[in-house]
Image (tube, rainbow, N blue to C red; front, side):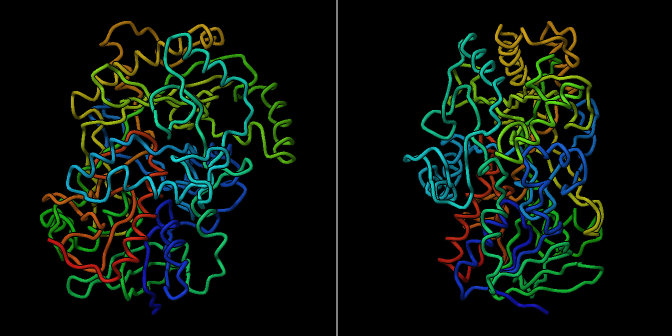
Length: 536
């Protein structure tokens, strides 16, 4: 039976960053448990454009589904999550976004002391290794490398020109003093290669004798002695074994699997655990509640422009040339994250911060790339940044091998679809600007949409996740909080949650960079307090 100081469950965006930081101290031993493989640095992961091979399939991907969503006409949503060292930072679109400063100030206002924007900005800067920006907003020496796009795709200039034509502001840095506007994303890449948290925080340090990485290891339950977490039981190569923790067990398994593991271990709503045959260790009703995500709709258009990704003879010839260029220069199409352009807009003057986000894609995207179309095209996502709907993660049964029951409850709150109607109109206006509309040959998705009811119908028919689930182990001091502002699980000892599930409310942007920030801040808190007290 292996014994270390810290056992971290989940080798994803937060888990890799936390393991890397904690193991910097040679006197601290760390074990990182990852259900996926060690292939976090394979060509499939490192080549940005190869994301199209992973997201639609169960390649390095849990490929979860939701329960049927009444707000989406009864459709099941698709929830890809990383299953490899690096987690979702190994299969995402690499957009480096922090959210709006007011998001973090709101966390602090809810009783989460130490989580205001001025408190978390130093951790964003500590994690960031920006290759082009160097000012009070950015870091240049961090493990998570950030760079401008290396795709050299001229089509993005048409997108920016369309924004000028309709009067939307342009923003050169979404993580600077002004988030609002249209621009191009910076990405978590270095020299045209994906830079996941595994590659940044762990790969350079695999020789550390105090760092153990266990892959293909599925956590079955947290081991407790009384109310103190003392280890984790894993299933690896068909064998059950335990890894014990002298100091703490940390869950970094994400918004679906961190609450799942808590519940499998007897921590959650007592009635719900009893109903699926899990013995109750500690009644904590907030576990698995408060799940929320950015609901996302995609405009898609066919086009004949060869700079856009597509299935055609000319596209194939262009792809061969781009493959050879990427091998030589690490630039061009294969360096693209596809969602190259973006934007943050306000649907009304009463909004204190942008409430919708755009992702402009140099390909025709349909059903998470699970449906392919012949020819070329482009797309534009629009998502609602602060939805009011709240869903749940729950157990189907008492087995760790059974996927969690995921219910984001998209459009459950009536205000969400009304806000998305406004977002639809603003995005439609941008897509119909002359700079873009001249490239459109057909619109295969929306058809004849002229009224608000038409928009609501198409939204319910085509909306799904933009891959930002959070909140299911929320941080706070109220009765439904799961962790305190030190990320310690309420009422238990030696147990923390460190990932996006602790967000009390979703931030206004992509969630990968904030998940890394959470780990950076957690590492400092854990070093400062090796023996966490019991709360509530």
